[in-house]
Length: 282
Image (cartoon, rainbow, N blue to C red; front, side, top):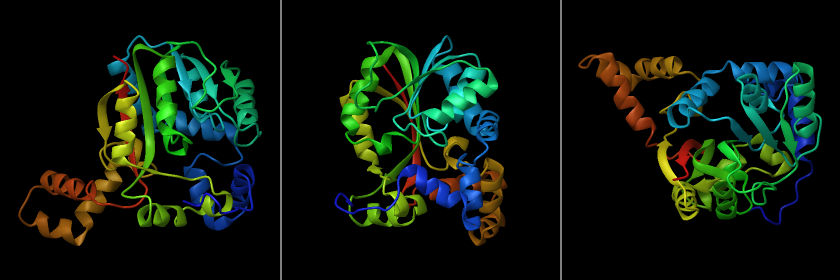
């Protein structure tokens, strides 16, 4: 899909265009891609999304010390983990000072935090076997040129009993109409052409074939991790205030109405819907 189509801008240029367009102000802010790199990092660190990630680490790998953040992007997660006391290695192929390794370095220096920054792609990680207790991939698996190879590499560098937390991965139902509809809805993709998505079964199969074990598959509306920038409270209010919710509220307690609403929403086949995966190396 789109393998032969030419796009006019790089990722860095696309973000700069969107930053300068007032109609995309909220998108840029909620994506932690504003020009204020320190503010982006601090907002992410205090977000419900990152706090939930920390809960997962405490539950499944409470003694974790070494974390790989891939892709490192502009440093929001590297900052968040480093400021939380972890030994962090950021893996990021882009070198730019706005959305790549230069941005990560700037955020760390300004915050007087330490982390290792490495230029690499997930399919070819320059680390020894069993190097990390936790590998955190935020919106990264769906960018894989070779998903199976990336997960094999993640398995290789993950320590025994280590965990992979792969969050906010786009899911489509097929690689024709569903993928096309998703890509056409992404304003950044229309500029630089770098977005992608896989089918849920392909994520699951690639994880299992790599030798990793799935602890949990988090559905689109089942966690603040996937919900952001919305909140659980906002979602519940939306369900209760819908015609469907108002009608059911005539007969059922609110908590049951919300549960039915979540059940329905998690079964909608919206192209590009977000899933997250908690995975363990046995």
